Image 1: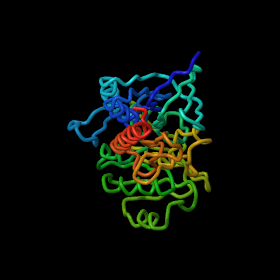
Image 2: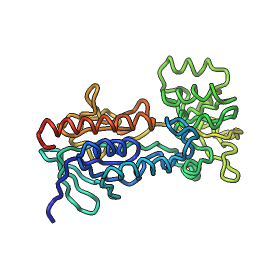
Image 3: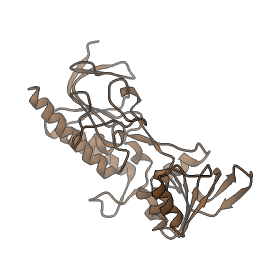
Image 4: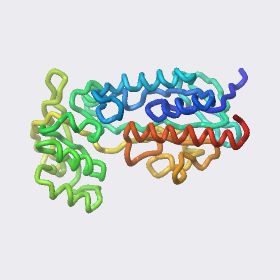
Amino acid sequence: MAAEHVHCLIIGSGPAGYTAAIYASRANLKPVLYTGPEPGGQLMITTDVENYPGYKDGIMGPQMMDDFKAQAERFGTDIRYEVITKVDFSGNPHKVWTDAGTEVHADSVIISTGASAKWLGLENEERLATSGGGVSACAVCDGFFYKGQNVVVVGGGDTAAEEALYLSNICTNVHMLVRRDEMRASKIMQQRVLNKENINVHWNTETKAILEEDGKVTGVTVLNNKTQAEKNLDVTGFFVAIGHKPNTGIFKDWIDMDEVGYIITKADSSKTNVGGVFASGDAQDNVYRQAVTAAGTGCMAALDAERYLGEKGIV
């Protein structure tokens, strides 16, 4: 079967991909968007979103992504529920293949494949995250719902320290579980954590179980890996801060990335090292990781793609 040719191909959905689609559609680039394995991205496992401008009463994450999708479709985006499994960015046009074996040639490509939170692998962890039962991988997103409550933060790096500090300004007590006898966080972040009276650092400590009742977190059983002693912490929130993994593996042979796998973009743009390939959202942002910033970079990628195609005389 002959390969399909498109002007603008968007790989991945979520705020970045759908925003890129909205802008690309309005610029008459006739974008084709492949949703990937998780249509809507991380917001599909987020319950209440209260910090996105325009939704004054808040909105459920899945509903918000439905709104983004409907807006993209309104302007003519061709949304396809398939996964891109292989790419070849060695020439023009760029080539990609779907899991169904379809070959697509694209004059421009916008990568918005996002990143996935790393979990501990506990039995009920992801279920409670998906249902809004008290497990989260983003304190800035969900911390507000635990105001005046006791929570746990798992991790010992800068991200965990930042999450603990953020939560300490909202919550009554923050228990920080550090697997070793020292943190990996920078010295200044460690000092800030240790200076906070309502952050209690538990060294050499791992999570054994998340306790729940009626689908809500009621506590955590922790294990001291030196003494093997166990104890229960009475908490209502469980924040996992052991990092994110960008979903960029299929691009590694073509696109410049950092050591973790986040795509490196050129300053003040969404441009990658490959002409005509742009990156947006959490696939290239390891700092902010918010829906509103992802949407902003999706806009940037679409504008950059439009300019690129215009300069090439393609559209």
